[in-house]
Amino acid sequence: MAYLVLVRHGQSEWNALGLWTGHRDVALTDQGRKEARKAAGHLRDITLHKAYTSQLQRAQQTLHEIKTALGHTELETEQHEALNERDYGDYTAKNKWEIKEQIGEEEFTKLRRNWDHPVPNGETLKDVHARALPYYEQRIEKDLREGKNVIVAAHGNTLRALMKHLDHVDDDNVHELEIGTGEVVVYEISDDGRVISKEIRNAGGKA
Image 1: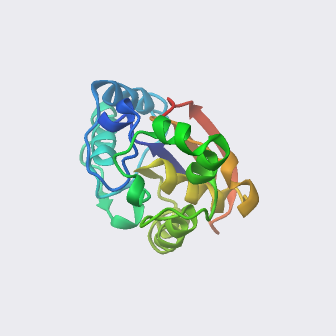
Image 2: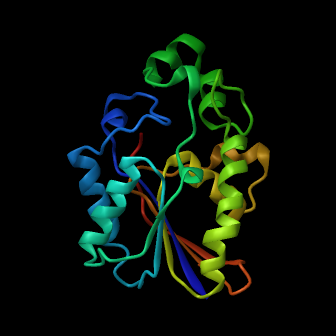
Image 3: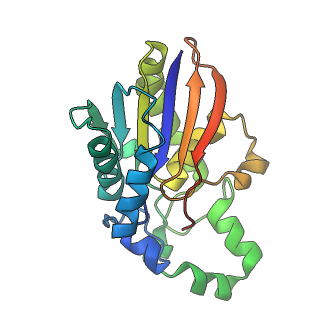
């Protein structure tokens, strides 16, 4: 058995402004760093053996804050683009709440949360799932099957894609998956890769 820890990055500068960030490489706010350190406090009972994160600094900074708070800065870490946030295409850098007013709540919810709702020049959650899941199965799950406790510090949609797989959520219900900034979700994984249990240890902030 091994632990899989999923942590969404803390509040970023664009989270604070209500902007769609996607692949834009923005930093954490001071609040975001505090959220990351708070997340670390919920992981003191788990000895981590490996860390994975995206190529974007807000996720890397979150992981750094966690490792520092745990006194575990030497933790082996792998960065990969498969864990990057969803590309919001033409909506990148636009204010979410202004867009909501323009297109209406129903369309806005589809845009943010649905499985395969098109985004002009961007990615759907289905697209994110198509790049994140193979990476999980080839790299992360391999470590878990070897009994290594793993932390993944990434992004809302990357983690939603992984949770869809882990929680066996069908396409029509994927909109119900949510993970806040700094939120910690801990899975126990069996030696053959099955989920034994799931626990939300730190409800995150909204962004």
